[in-house]
Length: 161
Image (tube, rainbow, N blue to C red; front, side, top):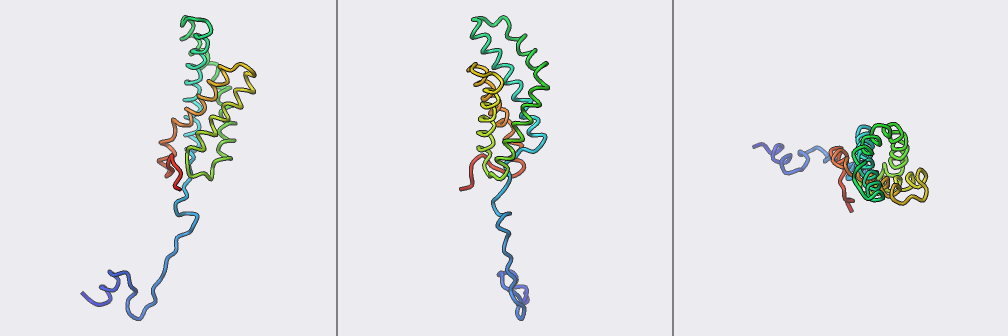
């Protein structure tokens, strides 16, 4: 093996040539976005709608004392709630995205979605605790459901520090 090849294998510059140092950009090292992207947010809204429908039906069943209307409520909420859920969910997803797009942990996005659902629930349902909590929980679970999509983009659920 020649001396030049041996020097390169050892990480040294060939004789007579200066060693080049490569310094990685600070922003690219260890900082990855924790957002699921547009389709991920759309899927999170759809999952939230289904969870909300089942939760609202459960609240109604609890208050009525029977499960007679459970399937009807789920069907009606999903059918007629799709457009309002898309509007409210899109606004909530946009707000959460703008507040957490620099976060490296998806926990901030899940927590933000839960809080956004709580605020939206309070604005939509006022003092009715059941639907407010169901909307908050469904928003958080919808965002949690798309964690694998954000992980595929390079983020983790936990903070790197």
